[in-house]
Structure formats: C-alpha cells, structure tokens
Image (cartoon, rainbow, N blue to C red; front, side, top):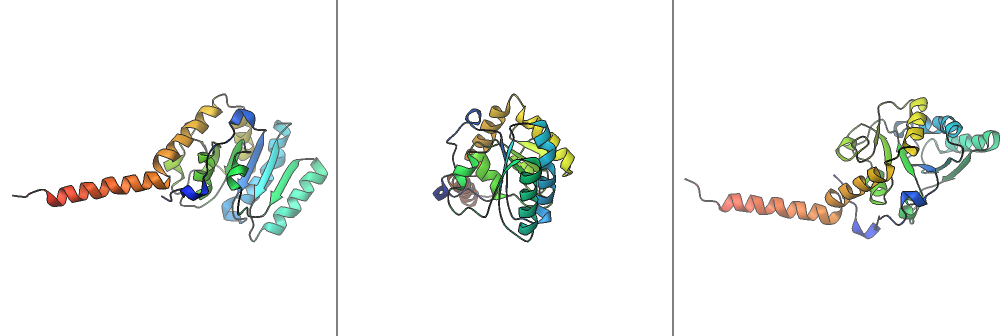
Length: 206
C-alpha cells in the first residue's frame, strides 16, 4: 500500500455539512479510468439533484473529448461543471470542497486519490477492483460501484448525497487512512515487524 506522504498534508479542513453538493473526478483521462462513464453520468445525476455541481481534474489522451463534452453540457443543459488540468499544489484544498469523489476505474491497484480524498474527509465512490476494497467497505468507509454503467453511477451519486449517515462514513474512512496508510503509520508497522523478526531470531532453539 502506498502511504500518504506527510509533506503533502492532506487533512480535513471543512466538514461535509459545510460543503456544497460538488461531485468530483480526479485522474488520468483514459477510458480505463472511467472518465467516459463519469461524463455520461453527469446529466443523469443532475436531473435528480437540482443544486448539483461537478468538478473534474486531470489530463490524458481523452482530454479533448472531455473538454468538448463539458462545453456541451454547460451550453445545452446549463450544468455547473468545471474542468482543470493537473493541480500540482492545492489538491488538498480541492478535496475539501467536494461532497463526493467518484472513481469508476476499470483496473487499478489502489488509486492514490482515494487515500488523499479520505484523509481530507471526502467520501469516495469507486469500483471494487484491485486494492480498493482494502480501504472501502460499502456504507462503512465509502461506497462501492458494482457497475460502471452511467445510469448506475448517477443512481449511486443521488443515493449517497441523500445518505443520512454520510458524515459518519467520511469520518470512518478518514480514521482508517490515518491509522493504516500515513507515512507515520507505515513506519510504525515496519518497526513492529522488524522487532518481531529480531525476537524470533534471538529466541533459543532446541
């Protein structure tokens, strides 16, 4: 598992109750990362949540297509949607403005964005692939997608934004990340393992 580097200082600065209904996507713009499915889910979700806003951060082979689709959704349907290239600084601030991060990736070990977002108190909706289920337990430390169909993504977004215990889920996920995935937590785990190994080596045999 990749620890969150302390230098990045990902932490919660705004509680969910203080945030607007902003749903975000952070990642490389490729079909495998699910950006196409997310874009197609946007108008469906916007129909169900009138004050819903969307924010996308990333770049990649599909950047031109994503830009065209975002312009169309803004112009034709009046959807509140922002699109930004990679954010070198201030990504923690970005996560703290989101009510939900959506990562409908097809294949991934464990997206760093999940750890960064949850450390900032932001709930995550992601597919159950790779190491994602090690962090996200549905409705306990996040939300899982059983399908990347745009209709299903939109349904889950609507459900999550109306979920009464969303703050609890976010707090659970933040606590899990602080306990297991920070650089300090990783160092402490390695120290415990080394102590156990040394104890076994020094233990007399026979």
